[in-house]
Image (cartoon, rainbow, N blue to C red):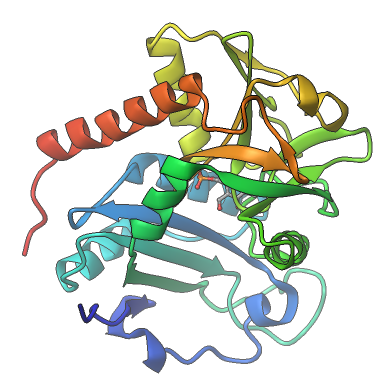
Length: 294
Ligand code: PLP
């Protein structure tokens, strides 16, 4: 089936994504001086918009980019009204804008540049992985000390993801110098031991994942004990189950790490329970959410 092409809003002007042109002096191009978000679209409706907008606002504040987040949100809905996507992904990026190249923030920057685009997402390969589970590798966490800011500086994440791909794996889970697992290259990481779920506590060394936060809430509601404490690389052999979460991944069981099976080597029961709760939550939200205006 032919999928509709990605459609973009570039500073509020709607055009095919392929027609957007970015000035070379944009600080995102020169320095990676920009913040981004990625949101899932189910049945044409963007999921967890308030949560993504709150994280966007916080990241922008942390690096002192002044942008009108309410207007960005309005533009996101305008864009979706113009695109027939049902299952999709919205990518959104705000840069500090264009200025002569200096490392310090320019005194008189132009307006931030803002890109939002929507593209169709074929969930079938992800759905298959959610059933079978995936293999992952461990990889050194080479990133900076403010991973809580969702900046577009993703080189260390890209290197980790590439290493995973070359190993035939779906994701790389990142290991800090002290042996603690922080998160995945583009997912949050959870372990299960003796029926309790563990994940790294929110701090500057991980992204506050939107899916992570929903999963913590859903596990809590289901009466599954949750402990926000770091998992360590050395003690991975002691966990019964491992899973990843993310906007696209949703809840994704991990069956092998560095070629070693986790638990039985099959997706675990607690993971399945949480994945079902996640799907149920999306279905309930869809049943109650207003239909897209088109
Ligand atoms: N951790 C990192 C480093 C990420 O890049 C992402 C998503 O891109 C996540 C975790 C998952 O975050 P979310 O659940 O908000 O998609």
